[in-house]
Amino acid sequence: MNQGKQEQLLALAKVWRDALMYSMRQWVQLLLAEGKLPRWLDAKRFGMGLSQRQWDSVNRQTRAALDSWMRLRQDEFRRIVNDSTLTQEQRIALHRINKRMAWWERSDDDGHRLARRIIRHLRCRVPFPDMRRCHTLSMDGKIADIQNSVASSRYARWVKVSTLTKGKPMYLPLGDNMRLEGQLMQPGVRLTNHLQVNIHDGRIDAHVMTVQPAATPREYGETLGLDWGCKTMFATSDGRLLGIRLYQWLQERDKELARLGAELNHARIPCHKSKRYRALNRRIRSYFTNEVGRLLNKLEREQVRELVVEDLDLRALRVSRRMKRIISRAGRSAVKRKLTRLEQGEGITVTTVNPAYTSQTCSKCGNVGKRNRRTQATFHCTCCNHRINADINASRNILARRSRKEGWRRIGRTQILSTLRKENEQRCPSHAERNAAQSTATPRPSRTDTEVKIISGIKYH
Ligand SMILES: [Zn+2]
Picture 1 (cartoon, rainbow, N blue to C red):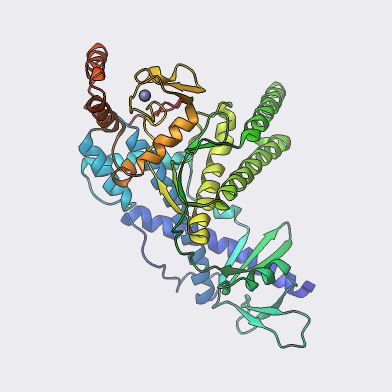
Picture 2 (tube, protein in one colour):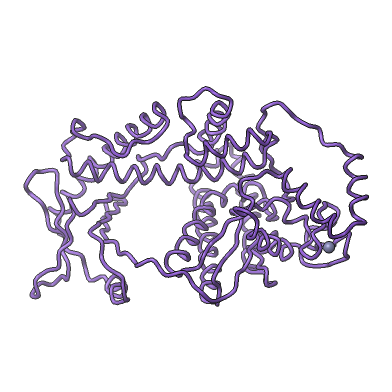
């Protein structure tokens, strides 16, 4: 790419970023005012030197960022409601609102008022996407047309990109991209008319997107339950513990974090201002997300047709709170991305279930109780004497949740506990008396106020 083209592209990128920020503000304003996102933004009067078609691309890019933000908040919202002490009706109302992501809908009933409070809390923790930090221009075919070049050219493909000057497009060569060409050799893979330009410290990196045809669901293979473990990344219901190295690695980094934290504290430097601290954070996050990818890839190569999972849960993992904070957000999106890829690219069905009480329930007889978990590592059933690694036990319960309606994702902890107890009593009558004695000894306070309690601390689901 010659210098003239680079300068043109950098000039476009500068305006583009301002446009992204402006566009995001428009979407957010409409979302908060009307309670839902409109289908499109009318960019006729937006100006800033961009054409209508360039604005359409900008608006699509911000819309995609906002959509993914909303989907992540939807998951968190559901978790908060499930873990709360709210009544059954309140929960149903909240799940209904959450399903439509209508948290800001203009309605003044109890449900909407509560929903607004929960989403305000979530928004404080993770604000709307900040487009200032976006280094990507995502251009669709109307403003970035990918063309195969005539045979004599050095480059196989060119992209015709609209610039800030009307009627003066520029032509960018797409260099010899071996990976892209390799991908295009695979059956069904085709090029989309979509260009992504990443700009980092003045360095420009342009690449085109490919699409894979959605894989047909696998018909053969096992169905595996996965549990996020306390000493390994996860345990599978067929009795394996995967990702043991990760735990050791995280523990070593944890020591480093503590040392560096203390040093910075001593020098009165806030952690987020330290380059070393930020670099360590980045290193931890990328290691964790790589491990997620590596381990799930391993399962992809096996004869697996379905994975039954819970959302990423780090509560059981025995590392510092600081460490959990560092990995949780990046980890959750990495897991999501990877599972989506397995589903679309490999045809593995992914089923998500509610994990409540899966770590306290015996996978053999169904007995539920904290006393089954006298130690973190081993599950020892007080009813049938079954002894098993605690994480593997949990993964078997997760697998079993698959046959419950909607994986029990829309019912709360209390209801799950009472159903599990009832089933266990039918199977094992001697337990009915003991459970009855227990529940009279420690009556659960019934709460009628609408307080939303966010349960944190040790994992005991
Ligand atoms: Zn048992």
